[in-house]
Amino acid sequence: MAFLEVTDLVKDFGGVVANNQVSFQINHGEIIGLIGPNGAGKTTLFNCIVGYHKPNSGKVIFKGKEITGFKPFMTNREGIGRTFQIMKVTAGMTVLENVMVGAFCRTDDRHFAKVEAAAILGFLGLESVKTYHLNELPIASQKKIGLARALATQPELLMLDEVASGLNPKETEEMVGLLKKIHQEKKITLFLIEHVMEVVMPISERVIVLDGGEKIAEGLPKDIVKNERVIKAYLGEKYAKGL
Amino acid sequence: MDTLKDAVDFRDFSKPEKVGFAIFSLFLLIFPWLGAGSFVKVVMIQFLLFSLFGMGWNTIGGYGGQVELGKAQYVGIGAYTVALMMVWWKIPFWVSMPIGVLIAIGYSFIIGYPLFRLKGHYFAIATICTSLVLQDIFINWKLVGAAKGIELPIHKHPDFLYMQFKSDTYYFYFIMALFYVAIFYMNWFRKSKLGYQLRMIKEDEEAAESLGIDARWCKIKAYSIASAFVAVGGGFLAVYNLYIDPYSVMDLDLSIKIALMSMLGGAGSMWGPIIGSAFLVPLDRFLGSWLGAQKGLIGIDFMIYSALIMIVSAYQPRGIWGIIEQFRKRGT
Image (cartoon, rainbow over all chains, first blue to last red; front, top):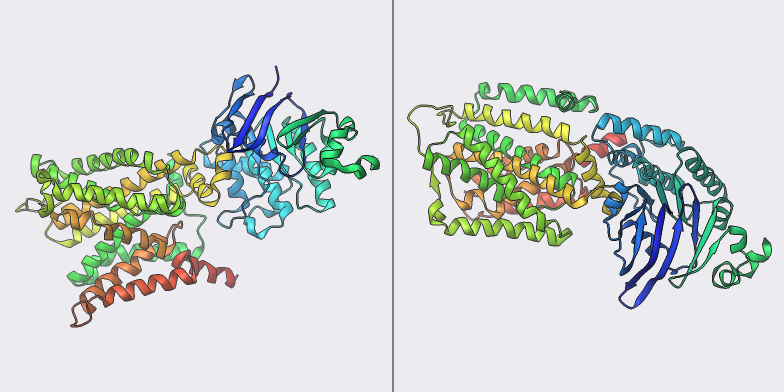
């Protein structure tokens, strides 16, 4: 049985079909990349799975349970965590408090939540910034805090929306390292939308490609870069030749 | 037990805050013996009462960031329950007040459920409307005294059961006790699961939902807590004034004052509502009785009052407490 199973998902924003008959499966413990040009419907697909959008038709099954149309907080309680492409930069809470909110998802005890949050910040190497506010930190740290917050809810599936966008090459490398660490040590299945090929190609076990709301390809990274439809729609000739 | 420990745990406050709070507490304790006139005593009682209202409002309005402008209906529910039960069935205050609070909580769930489908300005407008509707019902409802209101029977002798005293000192100590219960509750609340979740909702509701927070349900819970606080104050108002009518306990004016005081003092902070009330209650009273009484100056008290609010909100939206924190940050 597949860990996450999406069948014939359709999302239609009154004329614009953002997702058209998208189907795929994710197995437990995999790292899956989701790529495609801007406007391909990647974030919409995420939102449909997590529950920010209600799909017009189709099914989302997580761990054998149908979660189609669940609200975001419900899918989170089922064990799906997510991060956002653009994190709202706020000034009202410290980093530790932000992560504590995530930890409160699984506990009522404030002292326990604090310990838990501190442990996750330690895991991601963020202890030094725990008393800062989000607006006082560089974007790379903000992205990591988004990750920490989602991790604190103890997800089994973590869906990352462009976790490396806006990062410089060194930071990107660091982020890839973190993702690997999360995958290996916490045994969390990762599903990531990514534009940065340096992130998605080396770590993904499989890659799904969307274009114009439809799935145009799925397969191993090394096959995807040779796929003609993918090259035409997204990667460009240059990238394919470079490999 | 742990809950109690957390409620009295003020360790994470800064030293000036702790010292300030201790001095302030001492002042409150000896205040009735300082020989203040009756007018000052009334102002002090009003100050404590509005602090209580403000702290309640602060849960949903401050920590939750929802502009809630309908708290007066819960003052009314608290006050009317106490007054009516005393007039009809001679039920003591100590029984009727908790019942009033329970009714307020029940009512707040019924109102809150549809109300929190709305967001932002629409939510603010809707809260005003629900309060106005309830006020209108009470103005026209003969059974509960309609627009004339209700007078509570005055007992010949002071009576603890019905909270009737000749001297304001007793009322002062009673509202002070409620004020401290509220402070300890808020101290617990601000670090509780619900407190954190509300702050996250205020920061970024979308992200909050992704962290397993049922935003609407959290808001409804906080709204009920706020309503319970306010209903306690309403019950006090009934036995303190011994007369209530829909205009004095359910007016829009009252709702706005409750929200404004907290916003002025600093919404979403522990001391904000208290500071706001310490500024505005005396100002309101003194300006009203001093300037309002001068010929040709009627209404000028409102102008000063409003100007002050505009200045503070333009300079620092987080209120007086925000200004204090700004200076403290600069200092370090």
